[in-house]
Length: 442
Image 1 (cartoon, rainbow, N blue to C red):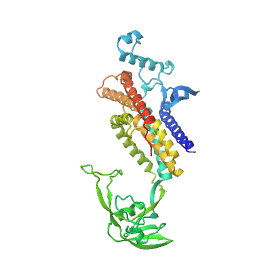
Image 2 (spheres, one colour; image 1 turned 60 degrees about the horizontal axis):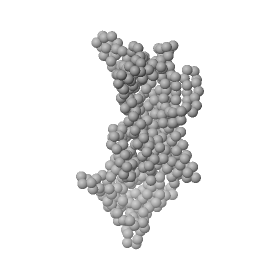
Image 3 (cartoon, rainbow, N blue to C red; image 1 turned 120 degrees about the vertical axis):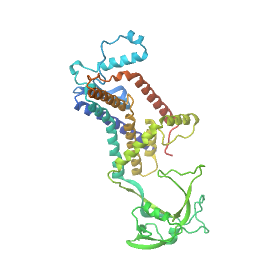
């Protein structure tokens, strides 16, 4: 059964990735067709074609490797200037010139003379930006929908004001005891008469609606006797609670331990009562999905900014066998392994499904941000080319000069190949690391 659940998690990621890619390419396809561009192919995946069908002037299909997709638009770049050089002439001018010439030849093949006006490069700048931004935008929309379902539909698991259990005693800080002895002091909540099933109504005269609110007041009241009102069997009962002083390590807003200049943990004194809350899924406001998507996008931008360092750390972990950073980059294999572990985990079904949804939302945010990197062959690179073309035209118009020729992005083919090579190398490193030194949820 565990193996079947693990495989189910893998399939969840593969299907989710396929849907994400399909919607990404649909985000390019729909505006391209609306703007009249001839689109020859809409393909999900790379490699050998599994199946395809031509509908109208476009061939729709699926290929064997589900690691991306593409649409083939006529005239992504302006046609070659003048006569094409032959192969010998191209080679004589160097490898880079040869690459540029080959790219121009391939681009020219997409321009059908009968559809010479239905080419991408002739679109106004804003339409080109819309076409290229459409793909990442669809990933963003999908992520927002997923996070909204997760946070506003299912909810966030939080401690409620209902008491699940109590500590019988107060154990010394750092103690490894697992049970109370007669010499251990009674926990404040048990001494005050709190019982499992009680629902906290107010603490120290302040009404509370979440366990976090109640806990904050208790922690701020070490050694102070405060009234605690609980609802028990339909009636309010007022108890007197005296939280004991306890040392707790301080954490920052992200839940990470705070350390001083010497690297020692920073501790502070808080009130401790010894109560534990029942957990429940609490539905969040409708805008929580959008907020979560933006938070994740910021985290991905930060990760990309530190990507060389993160990749170096992955390589070190792979060679030395040290544990990998769980917040570092992953390949599709790594995401699939985590999804499999989540699906097979010993946890309630809803909990596992919620984690898988969060994983899929984060994956789409990663696709959204990564594709907007302003380098060819990524969508962000095409957007920069379109904006540069628009800037040149605006500059010429401002000074009443003749319209310049369209920007010839084929000149950037050598740089594009370098970027593509780096992307392939990064993918290979992460793939090997996820196979032999994987990140686990352990």
